Length: 495
Image (cartoon, rainbow, N blue to C red; front, side, top):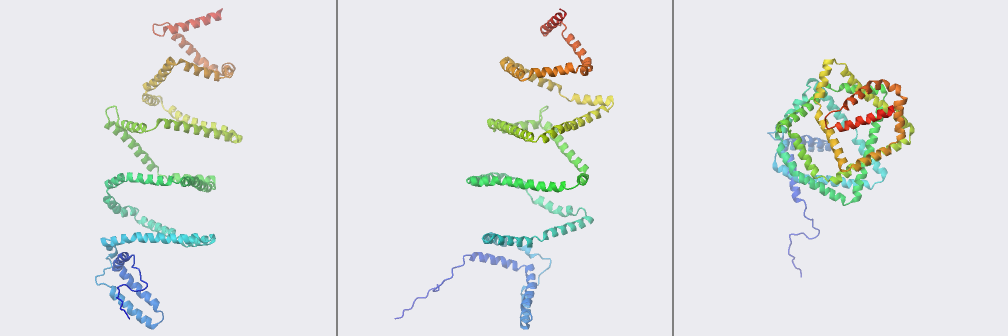
């Protein structure tokens, strides 16, 4: 008995799954429809489709007839009576909000598709033998590195030179409208606000990246291990470049440097220096104007800011760091000294060359002083008086007073410290060596020092005798003891 099975809307057998990207296909169709309806693309198809049909027709007469009819149909279907050559419909298409939204929806898929294709291709290449990888990369690099970009850049530069021969300010007045519009459309207040609002997010991102990286100590070590390689590459590149320079003869190398120096615009450099100096002068003047009389504003602000920094700085760690850096520098100096000691020729040559550097510095200083000596008495006296009058002698004297006051307070509170320091110094000095040095200076070199002594000592003795004269002041007791000591010495010599 046959039974009639009810019909179902679903077909029996293998069913085709619904397209997972139906909505995406509709969006893509809308994008293609919008692009194909533009005048530029329709004109392109009117030219391309007949050419393609002609290639397809070949020498066949019936294909040629068919292709001619098809080309005419395409021309009729795609042509518009209102097509104007200057009408830019593609640019207008991007003013369509719906088109932009559809395009934005497709961009992630396109980008992801490109990256997926690249990832798949790279995985396939990764499995190839080393020789196949080498050949593949050679083909890619050879076919892409044909110098086209260099040739294009050269041609553009050549055209720019030709344009500048007739209009030297071509780039300036051509780019000026765009720059002006860019600046007019740019709201720096919004950008500043965006940067300020992004600060917390940026710091959070940095924190997240660091937290993620530091979860894998081996990765951190790997990142830091790149630094020596980068430094080695930079050092090698610098060595190669300097090696090429050293390959030039001394006169040619010097001529190149002199040519470069001659190309520098001295007036421009002087203008830069003047502007920087003027900025410094204005900041100093503005600081005085903004502050109270005798109390500029800039030092106050700097003091406040430094106070904020110092208040948040760990003093223990800070000074431990300073001491550590000093010890590292001392270790470096010691290592350098040990290395030099292993090469006596290097050390000997250095000892002979160091005085030459000192001589150059002394010669430069001597020339400056000689320039002053060449001035006449009036001009020299005016210049020196002006220089000395600007020296704050009171501050110098106060500095000396403060040092003396500190030394006296130290001696009053802990005299043993001063005594210990003096004892350590005296015990460290070799009395025989210092005695020999003084003997050499005043006995063996008596004749050489005599002209200076004859000029200086009488005035010093006369001045000392005048200072020790009896007077009614707070120093009379000390002067009396000095006179008594001197009298005792002279009487002992007479006996």
